[in-house]
Image: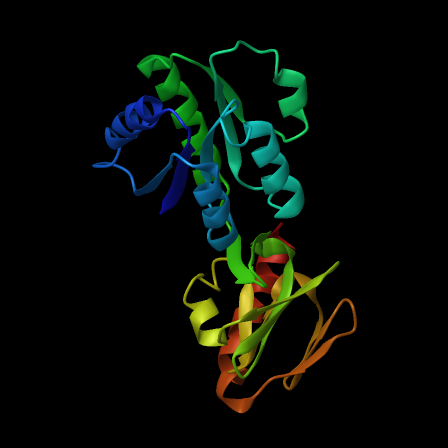
Length: 241
């Protein structure tokens, strides 16, 4: 599912983009939300993630520049694709550049131009595979699965470790694992409470796994046979190339 937001204080523009996007709904998985007030949009941004955001530059209560700053700097969201819209030409280009815009649409927005930008944004999001998304302390994080060293559950809290940071989210291992295909992304389950990314395994024995950063995990009996098989397959692939 791709989540899209349109934020513009001109209702006719909101309805226009809604009609454009509806053309793709039969063939594509899209969840679309329309915002006519920036205060409502800010609230939504704190609660959920949008893959693609169509954002007006000039609005009555808050500008698209201010919202871009809110998204990129306050929420630390560098993943959403920002498509800015304006009828004032490109005089805002330098101000918008700092927020890494994906594209700029000039009003009035023509169907053909919108279609080109929409397809490019869609392809970018769909091509961004292997992303793990979770919420922690009202912040939504999106991490490449290849960068996650291991998941470790403790009751209803899960530790998510990368080489540079450790994140926590309130969930269970089973719920998190239901979101991803572990085999596809190189994870192996060693215990009911944790799984490691085989890319970071320095030593693998019958009862113990050691990662490159010296973190150690024991392999519990119910997972031992499958873990050994999975690691053997992974090792063979590394040898082949």
